[in-house]
Image (cartoon, rainbow, N blue to C red):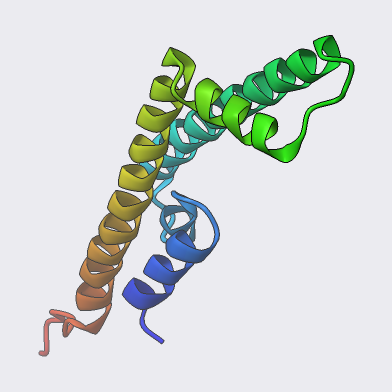
Length: 124
């Protein structure tokens, strides 16, 4: 399997930036990994805050919430402004992941071409 395909698969199946690590392109790898970790952190924080708010509301009602009330609370919390930031982070994460796959493939293809190019040796 060529380096371009391997790098794209690694980046697509593992985490954004890991394909760049495979290609030994450490600066782009660091960019993609750090940006993706930030997005995952933001999404996780937002989900945990929403879950905590729902649990607190259920505790205030003495834990007597039925499934319809629970679904209503989840919908209400999702419409909150914190949900908008999480949505932005989700879209940014998807964009980063797709960009990392494409870029890893592009860099791998260049490396494949360079490794297949005939060397220019002086024949004397």
